[in-house]
Amino acid sequence: MTIRPIRWFSRLYHQNIQLRLTVYFLFILLPLVAVSLFSNFQSRRMLLEQTTERTKAALTSSMDYIDLTLQNVEEISTLIATDANLLRYLEQNGSQLTPQAIVNFTEVLKQLSNMTSINHMISQVSIFHSRSNMVVSTANGSKHLVDPRQHEWLRLLARFGGSGIVYTLPDEPTPDGQTFGSVIGADGISLVRAMDLSNPDRQPNLLVVTLSKSNLLGLIRSLLPSDSAQIVLLTSERKPITGTGELSAEKLAGRMADDGTFTVEVKSKYYKWSLLLMQPKDEVYAKSEQMQLYTYIIIGISVLLALWISWAVYSGIASPVQRLMSGMKRAGGGNFNVRIENDRQDEFGYLTQAFNQMIYDQKQLIEHGYEQQLRLALTELKFLQTQINPHFLYNTLDSIYWAAKNYEADEISEMVLNLSRFFRLSLNKGSDTFTVEDTVSHLHYYVRVQQLRFLDKFSVRYEIEEASKPIPIMKLLLQPLVENAILHGLEQRERGGELVVRAQIEEGYLRMTVTDNGVGMSRERLDYIRGELELIFGPDKPGLSLPPWEAPKDLYGLRNVASRIRMVYGKRSAMKVDSAEGEGTAVTVLLPLDRCKETFELSEGAGLDRRGAE
Image (cartoon, rainbow, N blue to C red; front, side, top):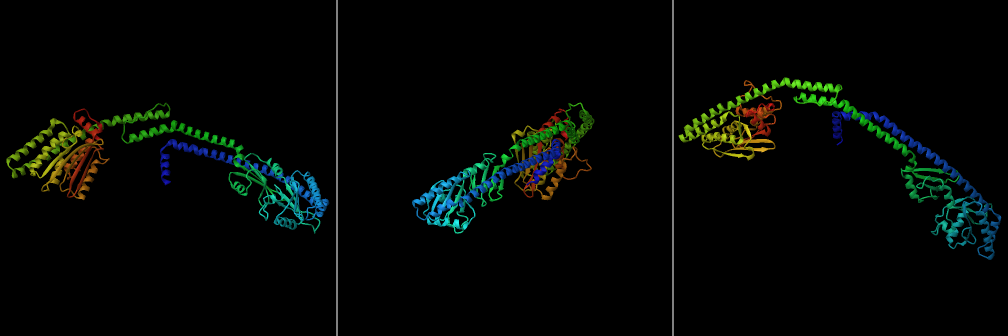
C-alpha cells in the first residue's frame, strides 16, 4: 500500500524541475530547522531543571521549618508529660467524678491552656485520664468516654507507646467504628504520648497535642506558584496531613502519574514526612512559549523563502530550459509547427530565437519532399482503384458465362443491364468519391448480378442510418468486401444465405459492416488475416503500400481495400474481421468523420491537404 505513493512521488519528482529545486532548498534548511528545534528543546529542559532546583530549595526551607516546629512541639509535650502539678492533679483523681476531681480537672485545663499559647502551631492539648475515662481538652473542655472499647484502646496506646511519640491522623479508625478525631475532638494530626515519662509504674494516661491544620496549610500555601498548582504535606505512609485541592490518595496518585504534571517532592530529615508540589507543565513552560513561537516563525519564514527562491530560479533559468527541451521533443516527433514564445533578451532569449529559426528552416526544406510523397501516394491510390475494375470485370464475365449455361436470355439480359449500370456509375464523371447512399445503390447492381448467378441462393439487406447517407467515401470501398462475402462465404451454402450491409455514425466515426452467414473461416485463417491487417494499419506503417515485388500474393481484394483506407483516412482508420467457422464472417471498416470530409474536399479539387497521408 505504501509503495505506490512512493513511486508516484518519485516519478513526479524526476519530471518536475520546480519540485526538485524546492526539495533541494528545503534540504539546505534542514540543519537550521534541526538546530532551532534542538535549541528550543534544550531551553525547555534547562527551564525545567532550574524550576525544579528553585522549587526544591523552597520546599526544603519550608520542610526544615516544619521539622523545627515539630521539635518544638515535642519539647512542649515533654514538659507537659513531666509537669509535677499536672501529674499530682491526675493522681489525686479517682474513678469517681467528685467535686475535688472537678476542681483538679479545672486546674489541669487551665495549665494546658497556658501551654497552647507558647506555640501557635498547637491548636489544642488533650489528656485522657484512665481512671475516670475523662478526656480534658483545651478546645472542648471535659468529656467522659462511655464505650469500654475506647477505654481499652486508649490505655493500650499509652502502655505500648512507652515514652515514645506517635503521630496520629484524625481519620484513624477506633475499635468501635469511630475515628480518633471524633473521640479526642481533634481536627488535625496529633502527637500522642504517655504521661509521667520518668515513672515506670505510671498510669496509662495519654497526652494528645494536636497541630493546627490551618496554620500548617498557611505555612506551605505561600509556596504555590499558581492557582492551578497543588501542595500537600504527607506522612511517611503517604497519607495527606494537609494541603490544597483534592487530598484523597487516589486523586494524588493519578495526578502524579499524569505526564503533563510537573512534580517536586522533598522529604524531612527527621520525621520522614514529605512536602509534595504539583503544577501543570504548561505553566512551567509558559516562559519558553514565546521563544518557541519565535522559532516556529523563523522556520516558517525560511520555508517561504526557500519556496520563493526555488520559484525565482525555476522561472528565470529552469523554465526556459524546460520549454526549449519540450520544443525539441515535439520537433523530434515530427511536429514542425512548434514555436516557442520568446520575450527575453538574454542568453535564453537568443537560444529560443535560434531554435524557432531552425525549425522554420527545416520545415521549409522538407515541405517540398513531403508534398512530392503525398502526390506519389495519391497516384498509387488511383492505380489501386483502377485495379479493382479489371478484377471485377473478369469475375462478372465469368458470371455471365455460367448464367448463359443455366438460364434463358431474360436473366442474361438483366445481368448485363445491371453490369452496364454498375460500370456507368463507377465512372461518376471522374469523381473519386461516392456518398454512402450512392455507394449502396452502386453496390446493389453488383449484388443483383451475383444473385442472378447463384439462383437467388442468398438475400441482401441494407441497414443504412439516415445521418450517414450524405457522407462521402472512396469509390469501390465496399464492393471487394461484398465480393469476398459472396464467393468465400455464401457460395458454399445451399439455401438461406443472407448478406447484410450496415452504415452508421458512432462516436466520431463512420462505421460500415459487411456481414454474411456463410461457412466462416477457421481460427488459424482468422488469426492470419488479422495479423496481415495489423501490418497495414500498424503505427510504423508508411503512407505508401509495398512495392509489387514485395506484396503477398493472397488476400488481394482485402489488402487493396485496407491499403487504400490506410493511405486516405490515416492512422485513426481501422478494419476488423470477425468470423466463426460454420456461422459466418463480418468485416467492419471505421473511418474518421473529419477525414471523410477532407477526402471529399480533395476529390473536389480544393487543394492538397498534407494531413491526408499521415
